[in-house]
Image 1: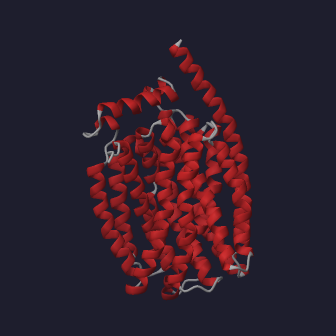
Image 2: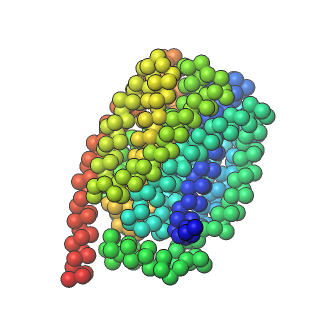
Image 3: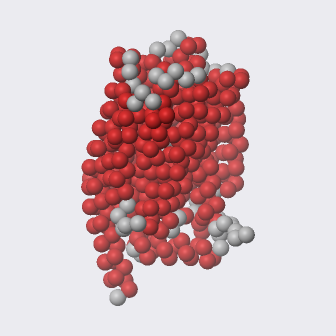
Length: 427
């Protein structure tokens, strides 16, 4: 049996950490109907608590790329996992709207730098031809975490009550923080198990694809980065895909309880089924972008355009089976597009700026984590229906398609520039 390369092992560990992270995110959405009843919270207040996560998450997203550059992946990931596990434990002792709101804000802040640290790890370890699939693997682990997290969380809550799920996950997270410190290093060259051949493969492929200057180039300042219009184009595009994601992550279990008449345990299962299909979206679309066509951003546009009608029809249809199918198709494409944004960022920005630009992109996308859950709560409370919220999601996906087409134009220009530089070096 052929031994896995070290870079594959690292990427798979990052993927596993994403699964663990989403166990700790979806547990609250599964517990939400029980928490509403026990603490006497209405949909609007519950939506505000859900948005509390997004407030902390958003602010640390923006700085996450710069923190990842400063402290490097090993230290960042270990600290992040430890801190979010502590606040997962504290969620179990919350007693009111205010306590839950504050804990969710700090919990979100603890997770904020995670994805920029992941992105830096992928940027260091994956060869350019592996970027789409590598991004797809760790982001494809996200729906796996949602599926398993929904099912396991619902079972734990049904058996031992809603507080128990936060105690169990919090203790497990501390253990995984320690394992991360043992497994991860800050660069391929620093890892004691890297072979000379694999290190040469990683470094030479990056030089060939991105240009020799990319290896030693210094990153731009905060002001320079924020004045780049392409940072904001990709950030708006990411906001669009993240908006739909956060609506589903927070409200899909409750949707099946309130609209489709499911039990708590059944809602966890129904909310998980679309994510089983979605788990394939990120690696499949990432692989397609690696092998079909030279411009990844066109795949973004395709994903947005196809997803929109499925999002709307999921809540229109009277059939729960068709609704599940529509949620599955739309989430397959949404997860694919989330992954593609990280691969596209590695194409359109200089290597030294990728983690920082990703932090801005993620932070802008996380604004939706603040507004989307609350928006759904207020719409449901005022109209008694989820339809309006999902129609808004469908419209936002079309805006994402426009941004993706603009990114495609930028990506083509960058490819021509890299080719010209390589030709000059080899001439």
